[in-house]
Amino acid sequence: MKVIDFFSGCGGASEGLRQAGLDITIGLDFDIRAAETYQANFPEALFYNVDIRELDEKVLAKAFKEKNREKEPLLFVACAPCQPFSTQNKSKSEDDIRRTLLDETHRFISKLKPEYILVENVPGLQKIDKEKDGPYKRFITFLESRKYKIREFIAKSEEYGVPQKRKRFVLLACKSEKMEIPPKTHGEGEGLSPILTVKDFIGDFPVIAAGEIHPVDPWHRCPPLSERNLERIQHTLEGGDRRNWPEYLINECHKTHSGHMDVYGRMSWDKPAPTLTTRCYSYSNGRFGHPDTNQHRAISVREASRLQTFPMGFEFKGSIAEASRQIGNAVPCEMAKQFGLAILQHNQKLK
Image 1 (tube, rainbow, N blue to C red):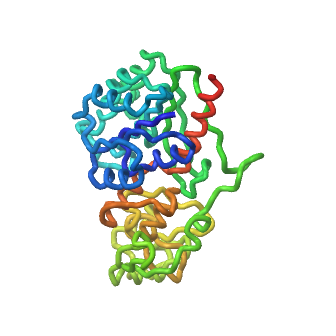
Image 2 (tube, one colour):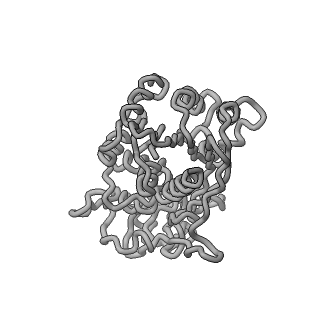
Image 3 (cartoon, rainbow, N blue to C red):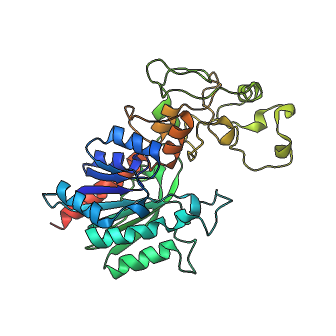
């Protein structure tokens, strides 16, 4: 099965689908650093580093035809930027042009007629325009008019082999019979493996200090800490937060505020990581402190990538901030792999 990955970012979904056995054929993303990362890791794929609104569907269709002489079935992946729909984005606006990017996929679907479509986004995408003609409602109406059978569900990444708490809204559309929700692989219940933890994925990484770059893996690195933040993390227990600190280290705004306890927190070894954001390299932007109380630093870029289940050899391009943004925006590879396996199995049953 061939894959065209729209809004590909650095390639989290493509990596997982490739591991499942699909053929990553074409990628597309506007972000220059994400494009460089994608091309470094998927040299076999044709890549368009353009705004989707500027790409002619006839051009893409012609290129795909050249790369699909065997006439294999096609999967469209359309994980449009989630920030316009995220509950964490307090400045989201009806005028955000990213809200309409999903609309751009309509013409590509009409032209190439993919057998399968996968959309992954934040929970809330399907609700934000529930009572008006928003992008998701328009997308569903469009797919139904083209006789696609649609399955919608909320996926918890930890139930698909990812050591991270991350809820995502998923749509699977098929030209033939409706797909079932891909079976969970981890959790409680017969035949399921235990939920994976931070320790399972980064427990054996070499020790580094804040601001240090490991000599073997240049992405096993993290930014330096200010003197005050270094003192804060030195007082923080594994799985702890500002409740471990002496009062003089607590920000005034936090002294009368009981929420947002993840800020300046350390991860726990024996639990999944919290949701990794685009600022997962920053100690002050979430529970991104390293769980080892002998390592006073945020998790490294490579550790963050592993908690998103990128393979160790995955190559990133750009600065620490740019690589972390790519990682935080990515679809967890292992979750995408499980979805890919389910799509292949569904397609096999149709033969």
